[in-house]
Length: 106
Length: 413
Image 1 (cartoon, rainbow over the protein chains, first blue to last red):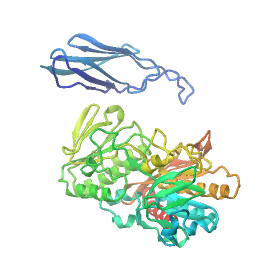
Image 2: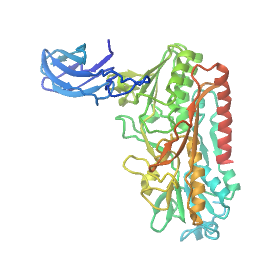
Image 3: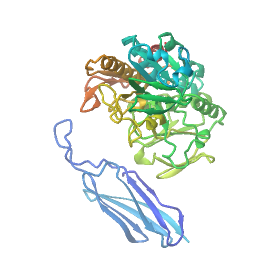
Image 4: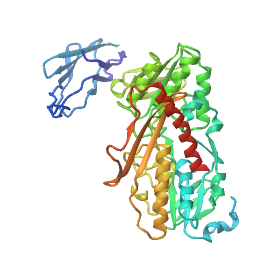
């Protein structure tokens, strides 16, 4: 279980552009580094990130080894209706971390 | 203005500067400027040295975290310029308003002009009041930065003393580079000590615009051993960067939330003291690029920059660094003024940080010019050991006091 942080406005007006931020605590190990024993440290990165707003995908991104540890994503979308924003981070092994936040739109 | 004939000085150098050998004007009377002026006089007494500094005394930053937490009197931080005058350095209590680099002339606020062969600029830092929305000079009167010692130091001290037990103290630490990299964490340690002994139901939150900091493991070990459960550090990745400040509400907003403080100490991003921009030695970063051998500005010839304002490469911005750079620059300049090639210097920095009133940890490094910057000599420095017994920390606490006495003696006499 990795720690995640998301920031979504609690309220917004219909049509308002809202700023969204999401971070996951993750080493984003590239696979190119050598450990102290001389062996390569196995690659372990978040490969895919997606955000759904009321069931519809509004943002997604592919991550690669050059993305930093604890990847931080900031993006914007348009507030359309009240509901949940859900965030999904998928790593190399297919393991998924999720987070969600509610927004009330008037 | 001892030694100056102000009226006659208007059209040229003051007599005291004109009569003798080369003339060097120093701007700024902190650790860098004062150390430099004295070191240059030691190198060559025939060089005329004027120190332009509007204050009658300097208020030292090292140890000022002990003032904030009631362990020390602000008077112990004050140093006058009498020692410099005894060395034959002329203290000019004025501000430089302009420099004519082509004529090698500094113009003061009272329109006195000082001609120089070399100008040495040591302006220290200024806060960037444009960096965090809501944190300007007026906000600093409510949420002190206390990152230049003086009235701000006392304001933060009064706020801590007046706070009710159970209050939340927030320290906002800036991104690199900034003055005194371990300073926010020394401050956190001493504030934690103050809270533990005086207001034990209170908490301390450090909001950091970085993911790592100087002597981190030593500080974190000290916090968990000496002040368990009292200190929380929030890194950049976990929402530590303050993006907005509401000073009247004492509320700090980060990327992932907001915190309402009883006492908030906002240490904002910094840049070289404003005079560096006026003179034309600061670049778009706000700091001053220099040649690492002579400390001559890469932007303006015959002007040298030392101390916190300079881009010191791997060297941290500290009083020790300022003093070391001052001596290296004095040696280089004494040579340059006599037509000698300067030698590549080796510089040392040591920073002590108090983790409790009588305990300290330290970091040391050795630096030399490499690829146009000051680079760290690998394997030459180090930090205090982790898991050391209390006696080791107390010994370093005594060393910290001795260091302060030694360096202020050397800089100010």
